[in-house]
Length: 162
Image (cartoon, rainbow, N blue to C red; front, side):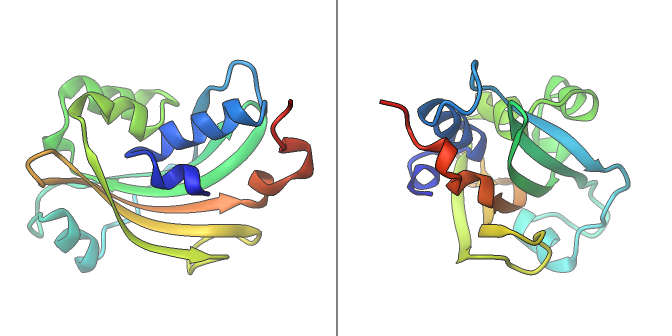
C-alpha cells in the first residue's frame, strides 16, 4: 500500500484508503482489542523504545476496522510516560487507534521492515507486514508496532468508485 508511505500514521493511511475505496461512510478507523493480557516487550523492543528493564511499557493488540472490514491487525508496545495522561486514558478505555490518539504529539514514523506477505506473528491471509517505530520530533521513541495488512485491502469490491 503506497498510501502507508505517504503518512506518518497507519491510522491516517487507512482512513485515506477507506475513503478512496468507499469501504465505509464515514471512513472512520476503529481499533478493536484482540487480546487483553499484556505481551511483555522483548529485549529488542525495549532497546527500540530506549527504555530500561523496569520502565513501564504498555501493549495493545488490535484489529483496525473501517466499517465492518478488517484492514489490519496490529501489535503495539508503547511508553506511557511519553504520552499525556489523557492519551493513556483513551488508549486504556476506548477503541480509538493509537495513531489518532497520539497524533497531537506530531510523531514521525520510521519504517523498520516491510515484507510482502505474512511475517512471523501475523495472521494467515496477511498481504503486507510492517514493523515501524514511532518517534517524537526529538527522536525519542514512543511506540514499536507490528502491522499485518489483510487481503481485504485487495478486494475487487474495494476498487475506487468513479
